[in-house]
Image (cartoon, rainbow, N blue to C red; front, top):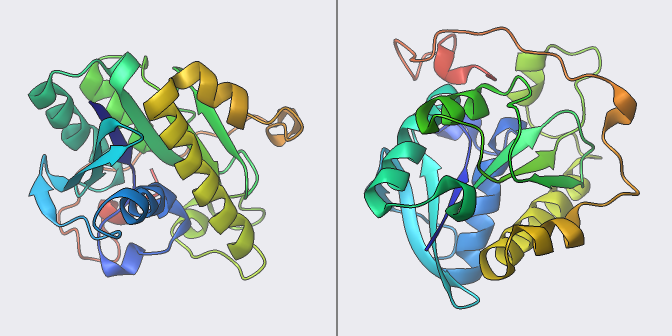
Length: 223
């Protein structure tokens, strides 16, 4: 069994935002292999669906704990099913350090300032788990939080949709053939990451929002 966790924020106000491309990849996998993108079963503090992917049982999980508490949901599913994060887990996440339309697969590594990954690492006790980073471009002059919580510009949308589809393809190969095969096929050397520009760390905010529905709450934090 494999577990694919797409990171994002719940709620209609976050649907279609840059920070929710992890949710979008999971929804696409559900559309291809399961209920048509309608994960309805509530478990592990998230929405869950089990689907067959090329003969492999795959759990699709969208945590509803808000981005910077994503580890709670992920760790619950890992413990319940007795999975090995290094072999059985794939976390799908947005990344401002790589362009729209591109993805990057890794088997381990740092969180790069992304508070969703920070919390997954905290909950799992380490960073040895595969992740698929989906490019959303950098924010330019816009603030980090406004950018990731905003929606894609019209000229970005076709590239973003292509990146989401590419990420779903990569997850399918990972589930059926393993991480080395997926990395060899989908990590494109002709599209390097951000020309050596270091990725800045976003400021931390309170992890648990006092009122998740309030516009100023930490639930809307890009972290």
